[in-house]
Amino acid sequence: MLIKISVENFKSFDKREELSMISSSKIQGHKSHRMKIKQTQLLKNAVIYGANASGKSNLVQAFAFIKATLENGLPVGSTDDFCRNKEANKTRESVFELQFTVGDTFYAYGFSAILSQRVITEEWLYELTQDGGSHQLFIRERNKKPTLGKHIKLSDAELSRFNVYSEDFADQETQLFLTEMNRGKKYDEHSGFNFFREAFFWIMGNIIVIDPNVGISNTDAYYNDESLENISDLIRTFDTGITEVKTRRVTIDEMSKMIPAEIVHDIFTHLTNQLKMTNLPRIQTTWRVADGFFNVRIEGNLEPEITTLVLKHGRSAFDFSFVDESDGTKRLFDLVDMLLTDRPDTVFVVDELERSLHPKLTEHFLEMFMEAHEGVRMQLVFTTHEDTIMDQRLFRRDEIWFVERDADNASKIYSLDRFKERYDKKLSKAYLEGRYGAIPVFSQFSFQKGE
Image (cartoon, rainbow, N blue to C red):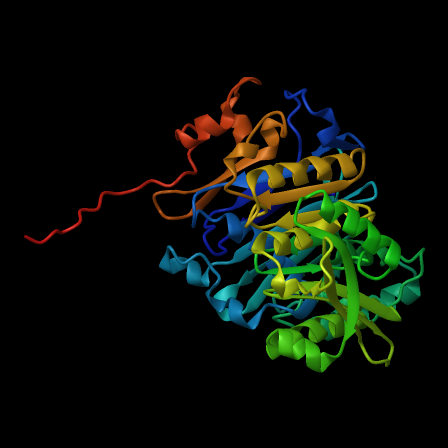
C-alpha cells in the first residue's frame, strides 16, 4: 500500500511537499477506511481539493513521472519540469520519493535529478522499520557505481553478478538502477536480489494513473464473456442507457483510423517495453484515449489481438461504438475497472475523478468503490472540484487534502485534519466560504464602456 509520496522542485512544487496515507490516531470514525500493516494504520482514500492551477494535477503527474522514468529513463521533454518560479531552481535537484508496503515489508524508494540537464544525481532504496529506523538496500550517486547496504547478504555468485551490473551502470545519467536490475533479469524465489524485483514491480504494476484524457489499465475485465457481463450489469446501475457491453476484433489499420498514429505507436512501444522488463510470454493492456477504447494483447511473435467496444442501448437494433457515447459515459469506462478489479494492493491515482459526471453519479461511484473493496488493500487517491462529496459521512478528515499556491506561486499540500472540525460540521459550505483556503481568489476587472 502507498504510505506517502513526496516531491520537490517539480512543476509547481518548490520546496518538499508530501501527501501521507498514515491515519490520524485522533479520528475514530470510518474505521473501515484504514488498513493495519504491522503497527501502522494506512488510509484507503485521499481526496484532493484546490483551485484551478493550484497544482493538484501536478501531484498526479508526479506519480506518472516516477513510473515513466522507471520505464524509459528521464523523459526527453522533462528539461523544463523543474519549478520555474525561481531562476535558481533550474540547476537545483528535483527529488521524488515513494514510501510503500509490499506484503508486510515497508520500503522507501526515490531519486533526485537536475531536470534541466537531464541528469540523475542520486537514487536510493531503503527498508523501513517499525521503530522509525531504516536499512539501506542500495544507493547510487552521480558518476559512481551503485552500492549495496552493508547488511545485504548475497551468495558469491550473486555478489559477482551485482559487481558486473554496477560496473556496467556507473556512467548512466538518464536511467535508473532499479530498472536495470529488472531489465530481462531472472531471480529465484530465495535470491538476495528479490527486493529489487518487489519494489520495481509494485511501483510499475500496482500504481495505476488515470487522467481525464488518457486512461491506461492492465485489467482482465474486457477479455472474457463473464467479466463483460459484470461490466454490463455495473454500467446499467449508472443510468447511462447502455444495456450491454461487448467487444469486437479490429486490425492495427482500423485502430490507426480511430486514433492518431502516434498514440498507436506509443501503445505498442509501451507494451514492447513491458514484455522486455517482465519476461512474460504474454502481456495485455486497456487504453482509453480521446474517442477510442482499445484492449491490446501481445503474445510472443503472434499478431497483436486488438478489440474495441460494442455497446447496446435498450431495444435499439443498432450497435453503438465508444465514440457515440457522452463524455460522462466515456469517463465511466475509465473507472469501471476500479470497481471490478480483484488485483490485490492496487493504488488508483485519478485526476479529476468527477470530470463530466453528475454529482450524484460521482457519489454513487465512490460508495460502490468503498463497498467493493472493504477490508481489502485497495487505495484511491484522486483530485476533484466536487464539493458535494466533501462530507464526513463519506470521508474521514485525514482523507481530505488541499493544494494551494502561496505568495511565491508554489504549491503547498495540507490536510483538513489540521483544522480539527467537528463531526457535524458542514465541510463543503466552510470550504466554499474560504475557511480552508485552496479556493480561487478573484481580482477586480472593470469593463470599459463607450459613450
